Image (cartoon, rainbow, N blue to C red; front, top):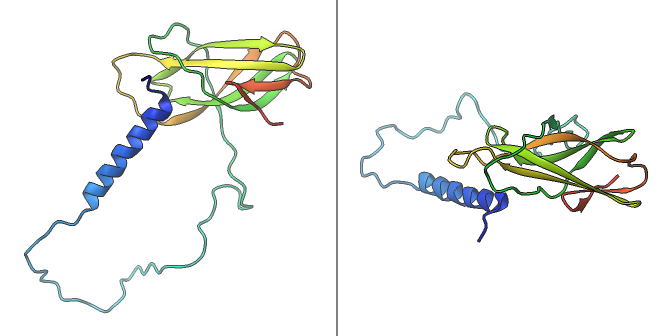
Length: 169
């Protein structure tokens, strides 16, 4: 079975959940606590409230804007390549299109290549990401990245697909 980044993330989350559960399990201790119980509230009273947690962003309840960081094509990388599914159209300028996508941390992963297929009605952009080294230990955190590609003709009204998923807008 081929392990995709989503399988690795799921496995990492399962390990973290087990570790958290193990650390939070109370250990039996027969030594009595010499501190007498108190009824006074602590000086930094943090009372429980029914107020909802604030949403990150500008205060209007909208999610914060994603800051995609540009990345260049690296070329031949030793790891098995994968194409992240989906993305976002960041900008167009003539025949140039900048798209945003998610990939592993740049210290561990790079863009091996970008394949573009154009028809009269659709532009498909497939970004192949691969590991920079086979023996490197990497954290499984996704980073927002962008890449600019040159098309044969302006995007215009054509549908844009990134990693096989149509981009809204």
